[in-house]
Length: 189
Image 1 (cartoon, rainbow, N blue to C red):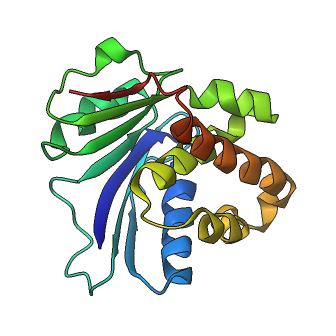
Image 2 (image 1 turned 90 degrees about the vertical axis):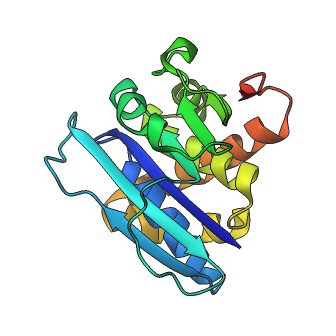
């Protein structure tokens, strides 16, 4: 088993939290994992990204030139990273912030998730990242939902403890979005 991905969006959208969540969940399952955050000018509103590699075998490098998958939460992320995803790869988009017409690539599976809308229904648009994490987990099966759910507090940290119940529900809603036929957004080009 091997999966690598890049996660990108604005600082404050929880990009690094998704990376940490997947990493902690993979460790719970005794998988090898690397997590490489980008610590450039990360501030609320600036650009943030990270890479995650999860494998059943030792990982040679945390550097990813052509990721198998990507979670792209805003237009600048699509412009910067969509073209790097391998042909036949998987990209999840927050369709509330990225219009389908922004995606110019073919030869890959595209999943458009209205993550912000779903998060608002859960109770806070701050958990849109967990909606996308749940959708990614359900689509790839890279880690189990149970491992991810059990890793939320580690991923978000103590200062965000008040949001854990919303994070869990948002993660679940992302899984349900992919499971249901609602994903007319599931599109393979």
